Amino acid sequence: MTSILEVNDLRVYFHTPRGMVKAVDNVTFDVHAGERFGLIGESGSGKSTIALAIMRLIRSPGRIESGEIRLEGENLLALSDEEMRQRRLAGVAMVTQGAMNSLNPVMRIRQQFADGLNSHGETVTVDEAREQLVDLLARVGLKPEAADVYPHQLSGGMKQRVCIALAMSLRPSLIIADEPTSALDVVVQRQVVQTLRQVQEELDAAVILIGHDMGLMAQFASRVGVMYAGKLVEEGPVRAIFRQPEHPYTRILMESLPSLDEKETLQVVKGAPPSAADRPAGCVFHPRCPFVMDRCIQEEPLFREVAPEQWAACHLHDEPAAAHSLSREVAE
Image 1 (tube, helix red, strand yellow):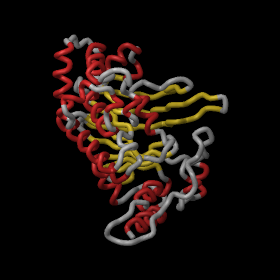
Image 2 (tube, rainbow, N blue to C red):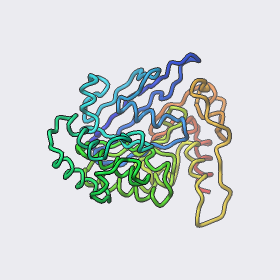
Image 3 (cartoon, rainbow, N blue to C red):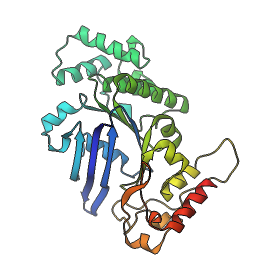
Image 4 (tube, one colour):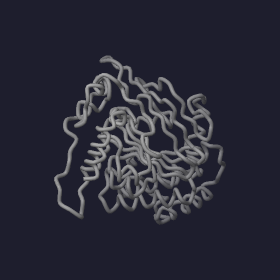
């Protein structure tokens, strides 16, 4: 399949008075054209930092230290600021976690839409801009009146739908949705995700959905990457990962999900994620891993293919007996 986005060896560090914080460290993945890709993990795992890096919105004291971010073959990190500004919205668009963070509270929705078009060289009249916006709003299930209001006059779910409509205005090839449903109730969450899926199918765009809700990710994504402490620890088809996770952290995340079929004790990941400024040596998950070995404490595991189309960074796959134990416990 053709890759619309290629992230290679991405490192994003924050240089603070307390030392260097490795928010994203040596992350590599790709997203195929028209694919729904999920990034999941605990808070502070680096998911949103990856999104900001793709958009070239990392601010001081943060810095993209190294790596490549290629959108349709073009390295975004090699573009000038003006060139990158033109790529935003037209090539890659973002729906943020809080809609009010991206909507101007003192401008009507139609004015913000017209500004986006004009900044990309699309010369339109006020009436033409409103007509286009009304069409976009209809596609995300909003009435024409939404074009003429201020953001605070809309509900949370309606604001997120407006953000999705604005994101699709120049038909980008990639949409990044950074926890777009985190502040919404479960009914509205489902509506927003369904809207995002409809938009993705209509544009035939790729979507990166960032979140921590495994159930929501299972409904939306076709492939998922699992982040932990700035590292990508597992990646593969969502069905395969739910059926047979290949990393202990992913396995515990799966076991933390309640089941309607049988009663069982839910598992939790003991302890807390390490500080981004003081990560442990070796495998970053070893202080919380139930399968920890001496090797894990000293040696960082390679991120490699451990099953068909599934990649993981875990020393268990070098130890046949330990890997068999992990598979057996998941099956049980």
